[in-house]
Amino acid sequence: MLHIIQNDPEVPPGNLTEHLTVPYRLHHPYRDGRLPDLGEMTALIVLGGSMGANDDAHHPFLTELKRLIREVVTTSVPYLGICLGGQLLAAALGAQVVSNRWEELGTLEVQLTEVGQHDPLFAGLPQHFSTFQWHHDSFDLPDGATLLASSPACPHQAFRVGEHAWGLQFHPEVTEAIIRSWAAWDPVTAQQTVALVAAFGKQQTAYRQHSQRLLRNLLRLVDPRL
Image 1 (cartoon, rainbow, N blue to C red):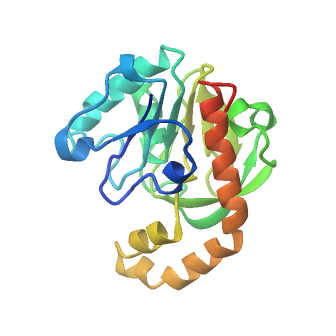
Image 2: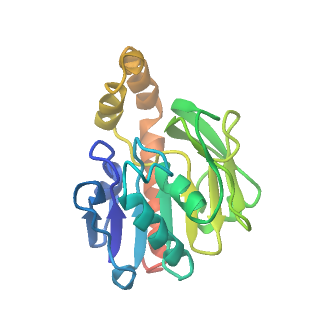
C-alpha cells in the first residue's frame, strides 16, 4: 500500500490524493507520533511542513521519520519527498539543510538537467515546467545523489538517491485553497494572496497535468500497468 506522511496540519496532500488510483493510507505523526512500518509499504510520500528538517527538539517525530527514511532508501520501495520531505531525505543521509538560502515563493519554472530529462520520475514532462514554490530552507545534495532539476533562484530543485528515492524542493500537490491557506500565515504574504492565486491560475491546467504525470510515474515503479 502507498503511505503518505503529513507533517503539518496545514500542509495536506492536496491534489495528490485526487489523482490516486491505488489504495493509500495517510498518517499524521505531528498529532500522534505514529509512523508506518516499512514492511507495509509499496511506496512512501512525505509531504512538506512549516518546521525545519532538523527541528527535532520541537517536533520529536522527525527523529524517527528520518530513521524510517534511511531504512526506505536501502530498499526498493519508491520514496518521494516534497519540500520538507525532500529536505528530510537529504538530512537523513547526512547532507546539510540550510535556512534562509535560495528562498522562493509563487508559481515559478524549473528546468530538468540532462540526466533529469531521462529520469523515470520525470518521464513525459517537458524540460521546463511550472511549479509552485514556498520555501525558506533548501537542501544540499547527499553524497552520491544525482541532481535532476534546478531553477535560477534555487539550483537544487530535485535529486535522486539510488534508483528509488527522490527529493523535490517544489510542491506538485498544491491547490488554490492551499495557496490561500498558506498565504494567511503571515501579514506580508496575506497581502500577496490575489497575485499568488492569479499567477497559479494561469498555469494551473498544465501544473495539474504535470503533477498527475509525476505521481503516475512514481506509482509505475510499483505497478507498471498504472
